[in-house]
Length: 245
Image (tube, rainbow, N blue to C red; front, top):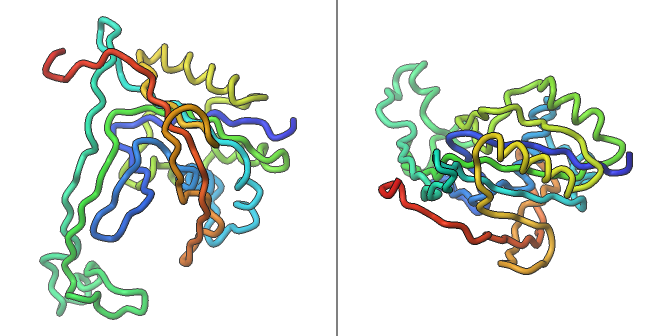
């Protein structure tokens, strides 16, 4: 099978797909990034470090996403919630003189204290109550080991951040085309009573074209990415506020 498509189903109460984040503000797009999906596959493989050669095999292959919101008992789509903002204070209240507590105080890579002291304020953003069908094209030489890893992952799988646990099996099948994979995703969404809210296509198509710096060249301590153009399409649908339901 030449470069087949994997169907990944990413569903959970919270997801986070960072694109342009800094330490104090951890943003999220409202759809999965390619770097996030490939990072998930690396977790399944138990593969750390740069992974440059492995990433190069995936870099130019296609990835398409369809996002689904829940529907109510009458089949109406529920309004998509805004990003959840979660406030964190990291490293506050620990005793620097206690050898155990000092391990919990944030430090720089060389072990010295962070600039400005130990306590850090961070704001972290999450997508709420979404499900995504991701059709990602896999290299012909790597798809078998990737499927095996998704079925028996070495490390925990999560949806962007480690506190975002999936609530459905992620691997949902292998297909000859993106269209076939996304049809299977649409069937699963129908069974789960979900409504198509957005579509993300690789390349320039009709819709909102954006440039994402989400194609990983190297993971590990010194990360590197390159750009990718995608088109975001948001189908019209009747939207109800939570208060109206």
